[in-house]
Image (tube, rainbow, N blue to C red):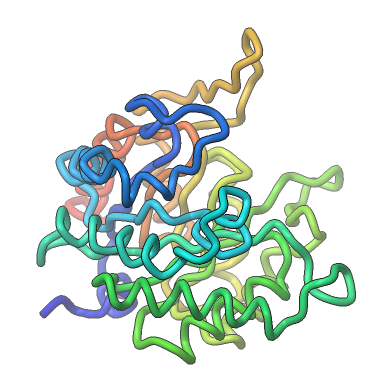
Length: 299
């Protein structure tokens, strides 16, 4: 039986995987298509992405369910297939992970706001997140990462839904952006310290940051989270900051450049390291080697 993720991450630096969407695009996903639908209709391609990251050295495989809430799936007429899609996403990841990898189910934001900022109630959000969480558990997930969150209220409702309706490890990951004053905050103005306090109060076992920044800025964010928390931290930076080239968003940080930042992320306090936008199996392979070097040298 696998040791619970939060217990292992408390004593060892672990490698997560990288970007999913761009990998599916390379396999034929077209703009406007529902990535999560591939869990049902093109499962072999989703498995191939998981397998590529496994081969690259990731210990944690993240599911293809980022937009799997009933709110997001409604855009594609799939709101009544939430349980089926999320369960399938977890099961596909488990097929590849076997007993040697952790399956971390991806739960992304709804794209809507709760009252009083929007029309949705907390009860509706809770029900939607709980629906996903139960499906993840049924599909064989070990953990759920509530990720790319910007509104602390939504994040905390999702964390509570995971903790109160399943026995899974719960990670909470916010997206922070550089601010004019030199600090970091989410699009909704939430600072790393505010996020840490409230996500932990909601019950998160592991907290951290993903997207929004490259690894250099992520070091500062992780350091600030470590200053106010004792739980394991996860860092999943983009492959640098995006640039627009010929109408296409490009992330220019190379695998070697990303790997060069791993020691600094670990020193800042990260114990789970992976990648977000622009990262590939090549990035994760280089970062996994860097993590191994840190384990061997202790720095």
